[in-house]
Structures are given as C-alpha cells and as structure tokens.
Image (cartoon, rainbow, N blue to C red; front, top):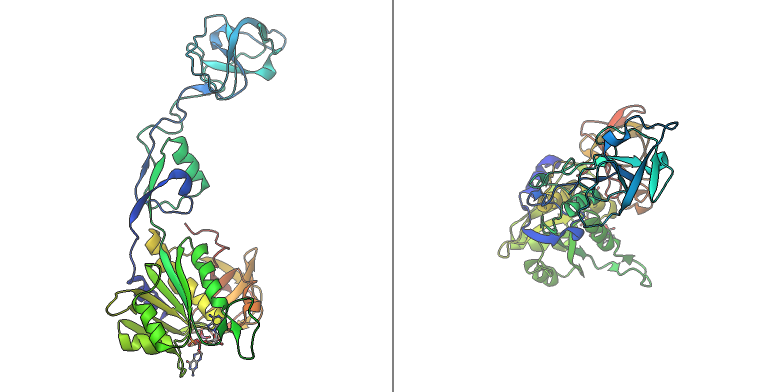
Length: 406
Ligand SMILES: Nc1nc2c(c(=O)[nH]1)N[C@H]1C(S)=C(S)[C@@H](COP(=O)(O)OP(=O)(O)OC[C@H]3O[C@@H](n4cnc5c(N)ncnc54)[C@H](O)[C@@H]3O)O[C@H]1N2
Ligand code: MOO
C-alpha cells in the first residue's frame, strides 16, 4: 500500500503554479501575489494632523497650562482634503482637522479639548512638544518600498495597504480551474423524487463547495452515468479547460467502477490503495493522449471529503502559488479515547473546542450526518490502535475552520 505522503507527492507532481495575471487591487482578495507590490507613494503622503484641533508652532505655547492659557489669533481652517498650501505665521494658529495637511511652519497640534474652541481667537492650555499629534510623511511606508512580497495570500489588510500605496493593479496567480465529475447510475440531482436505490449526487455539490472554499474556481461540473464511452469521451476532453479534473466514485473493485476501468485502459493514470482510512482507493495521473491532470477520489462521501483535504487541497495551494506543505496543523488533546486501525493513518473527524477534540459522531465513510459538525481531522498515524483520552493528537483544520493557513 502507498503511504499518504507518497500519494500526496504523486498528486503534487501533476501540477505547478498557474500563470500570473494583473487584477485591480480591489479584486485581489484571496489571490496569491505573483510579483512584489511596491509603494507608489509615501505613507502618510504629507505631514498631517492626528487630531481635530489647532495647528501651532510649539515655541509659541511656552508655559501654556489649564490655569494659564495662551491666546492666539486664528487664521482660518485647514480641513482634510484642502489642497492649498497654507503657511502658519509666528504667534498665530489655524484650526485643523484630523488628516488635514500641516501648514508650513506648524510643528505641533493642540487637540480641541485643550482649548476654548474659539474660531477667531483660541485660548490653548497645552504646551506641546515639537511633533505632538503630527503624523509625519513617510513614517509608515516609503515610496519604492516593497510593501507586499510575492507569495502573499492577499487579505483585507493587504488590499488596504496596496490601495493606500496608490497601486491600482497587482499581479496574482490565476485561480486554479477545476472540473468536477461525479459518476454513478444511482445518483440524481438534489430535489429529485427518489426511486428505491437512488441517492442525491451530494458529492458533486460538496466538491464544488470544497473547490470554492479553497479559493479555486469550478471550471465545469458534470455527472456521468456508469457508461464507459461517456466517461472516456469526457475525460479525454473535459469541459471547462481545467488545470485539474477531480472525479468521485468508480475507483474501487466493483463491476461498474467505470472511472478506474476506463482510465486504466486509456493509460497515464495510476490506481492505488493508500494506507489511510477513510479514502483508501485513490488514483492520479495525466490522461494519456490529452495530458489532462486527474485526481480520482473515492465515492463514499466522507472518503471523498477527507481525500480532498489530504490530496487535492495541497495541489490547489501549489497551483495558487502557496506552499502546499502549510496545512494549518495543530496539536490538540483527545477529550475521549477511540480505537483506530493500526495498518493505516486514520483521519478521524473531530470537533475541536479550546484545544480539546472529540469525535463528531459516527465515523462511517457514508455518514454525512456526523461529518457536517466536524471542524478538523485528527491524523492518527499508522501503528496506533487506540487514542487514549488525554493524549496529544495532531490535527488539521477543515476548510472553513482554518486558523493559520496562509
Ligand atoms: N470489494 C471491495 N469493495 C470496496 C472496497 C474494496 O477495497 N474492496 N473499498 C471500499 C472503499 S474503502 C471505498 S471508499 C469505496 C470506494 O468506492 P468507489 O470509489 O468505487 O465509489 P462507488 O462504488 O461509486 O460509491 C461508493 C459509495 O459512495 C456513494 N457515492 C458515490 N458517488 C456519490 C456521489 N456523487 N454523491 C453521493 N454519494 C455517492 C455510492 O452510492 C456508494 O454508496 O468502495 C468500497 N468498496
Ligand atoms: O476508504 Mo473507504 O474510503 O474507507 O470508505
């Protein structure tokens, strides 16, 4: 049997980073920078006031105090957005608002709270030091600084910084494009009236949701019956011009396991047993002839879900320009004991709260009822028969519950 690491490496070998493209900074959320972002302007762009108050020359307020105000004539206002260049004369003040450019000659700001609020003459009760309540040009960022390095997964704060640095477009990796294929004669669309033996094609919607939750794009989605010709025709020329095709179902030992049957015949895709539970039957490769990269996931819903996290997610990260090895893994304490199979790595679906994990109900690979509550996978290594209550277990967060991916 192949180890989890070996199969993950085989899947990763199929893919590489997607090409770079320019996008407007406002559309960069969730994308990975393919090039450094360099500030076009200083931040702040000009010396400005941190307070609503009075622009002053600090030396004019020597000795000012609550009990000994210094009264200065007010030479008008400077508001945020005022583009005029004002000059502050010695022995005078101007009312100034937060973010407004400092008049030439001004070296401090007295907050309005330390005044009588006068508009023509103001009594000021603070003796400020030079620089008090002043935000200096370039104190945060200098024009020409690399503010975001290539490889950054763009979050809201990164969008804000690039925009403030007056960078209208950034270069990012194209979102990985994934075509999702579900297979099986028993499957019908959600909302159908179910005949005996039929089930809803939930993996299809589940895998689409996982692809999107991973920040990738669903290039196309299709359900195929267990018809070898239809499966062959689709996999040789899949819809959506995808970077990767993921299939679910039809990879085990059954008489109608069409994906395995067809791709074994076409060639280029290897079908293996991986020492993992759930998710033992797996396949991956490039379809001979077309060169389409395919990862074939098992059909059992929980197996498919777990396999996506363990094998497909690292590949999507690599395609997006991220480090595939970063998985947000964390150590937790088992809040209860449970048995596992010693021959395989067991991906127990768990609920994590305050660093303590418990199983999320039944662990059967068909049990979506128990899966939905899970927040993480506890990865119990092969060789373990029982996880003892109180033991430390290594966990990875499920998509939507990630804490430290990036
Ligand atoms: N004789 C053996 N039988 C099985 C083995 C084995 O080693 N020897 N392995 C078992 C394991 S482990 C798994 S996992 C499954 C994998 O089977 P397939 O990938 O071939 O999947 P199917 O047979 O098509 O379906 C399995 C199961 O999942 C349901 N299913 C399939 N697709 C969907 C979907 N899109 N949405 C919802 N549910 C789906 C399907 O109805 C079956 O119940 O094989 C075991 N058997
Ligand atoms: O591995 Mo299957 O994936 O155990 O149900």
